[in-house]
Length: 336
Image 1: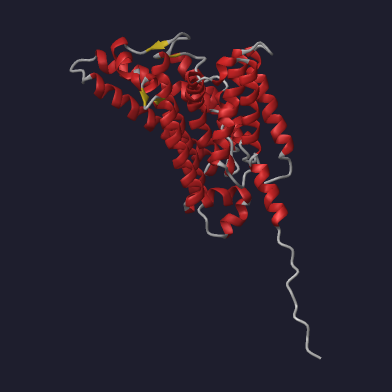
Image 2: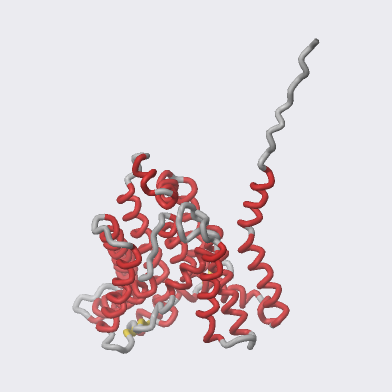
């Protein structure tokens, strides 16, 4: 009797893959529904000008959130980004004003470029210090960044004597196109946000460094056994976030041309909210740059709808973001 041919009856895990894909589309679906609701509530919402306004305001938080994605994916957190942005803005303004009034002052364009370089250097240095305190100092990221949150804000308040630091008028005029100029109808901050997001996605998903970041967030001990230089990767992760904060600040300063003790208030809340809404687990292990971008836009759309309608007070925007963080964190419980 001839043996009957056997067939492989192992089920193909198509359903779990489909569920995972649909789960990843959750922020996109939520954003689409919000846009439909916004257009229905106010006809001005669906205009091109309002779209550009939303994306421009998203750019600052979105750029910081891209860096925050790396930190959270590696199992860390940074509560100081808003205060750091404020201090970077203050340091930029003080340094640029000193250069323009000093003897043998360089040209206005040179001063602006020096201010931008100073901001990037200060952001990178601050991020590096965070990383070193966390890795070599063996202090929890929450404690380190909570402490520097107060330090950065206090130093800015001291520099401004409790008031405002205002950029020289001529420098402000020269610097303003960085925020107000458009390329092909799209504001410069939106282009920069797009470039940062693309670069972040490539680094996180297509490089060994990005794989190491996610491996550390998934299981740090196993990552050490796999010969991953955990401390080095963590330091680079906080350095990257510091640079992202600096880039966002460089785009923000020409908007108002000043820095005050309230500059950047609650930016850390918005950045973390954008990351978790985008699907990155607060427990680390995996990061989604595209999801972070969608999360940042979604939060801006919520604020924009509140501004255009009278459903609830615009002063409750931070409360809405807080509810979003708690809700998403609840839905993510137990998941890496």
